[in-house]
Length: 257
Image 1 (cartoon, rainbow, N blue to C red):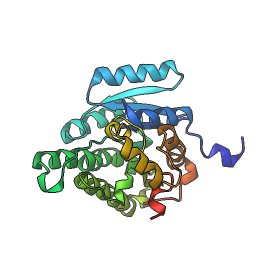
Image 2 (image 1 turned 60 degrees about the vertical axis):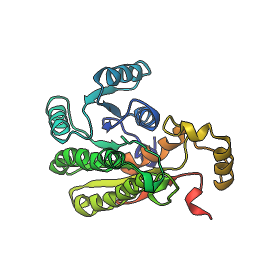
Image 3 (image 1 turned 30 degrees about the horizontal axis):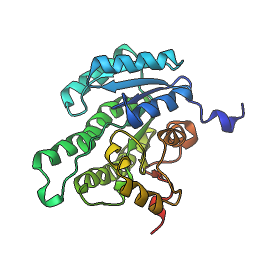
């Protein structure tokens, strides 16, 4: 194996993925695991996390479990500190946990706004802070924040979601500004429109799907496995001098008008 190829391998590294029991999080766990990482499956439901970890192990992927809620700061700090002490170092963090709420902005419920921010933004801050303190001590680490095409573009009925994902993009830059000197690379991975459970209503909407395929240069919805290449790159030593950037995996959507 050439040095160029080996720089993409994740053997011997451990990757914590929040919200990893379904959708993009689960697919990224498979992708990072296939590249050699031991993946740490996070969910607030212990039974669900253990089930998914078991399925991954049956598929030949090293998998462990870290149970916590990304909105529970004391609980997640306790869980992450215990994991580091009892199991081992978290070399890669993927902040994937996220939710969506839809409504016209003038009617958007304040509780839904706060729920979005607690999960999509506050959760990234809390988990990153808990993990980064250990990474800083080791002077190495990779953080991948799952942003969105909505980190750049807005659509009706999801303005608060766009606000949360735009904030994650800027928080990623802030992580670079603060933590690059400690050997940490923090970057964003921004999916376009992918056929996931979160987007099921849109996938099933024929008019929206037709509009999306015309709007996207690639002419189709994304497949979740197509996110794995960029994730492996950002998690590997191949990206050691890339920091504070957001990679859009969107079939060209944000590049054209």
